[in-house]
Image: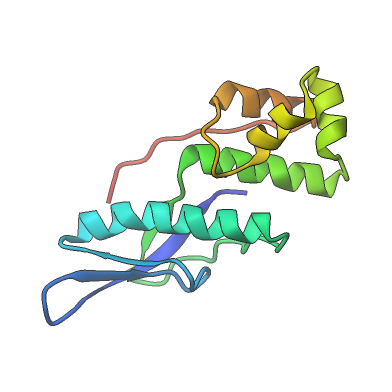
Length: 143
């Protein structure tokens, strides 16, 4: 899944930009400029999706953008961890089983799948690989 969501920006009467995402209504932020609001939205989306995942809720699939909306990606490490958590769930792989497959402790895997824990990307990639998944990274011109 691509973790990039359509975001609407609205300039308020005070001149600030208010950012919302119809796919993830709990992700709301603002900024003094449109670029600042979009930058903040990356973190708001990441936090909201991490909360969904930790609560065991399905992650919303990004919808197609409407005219005038911006596509905003989530934090890359959080996206990788969400992909790992999804793969584990789809394959019914527990933290203990993934630890066995990776030759790590269960506590190391708990940190690896925790979206709020700062992990090395190569560890998440290794875990995805043992589950038959791969991580694809692309760059895009910023809005």
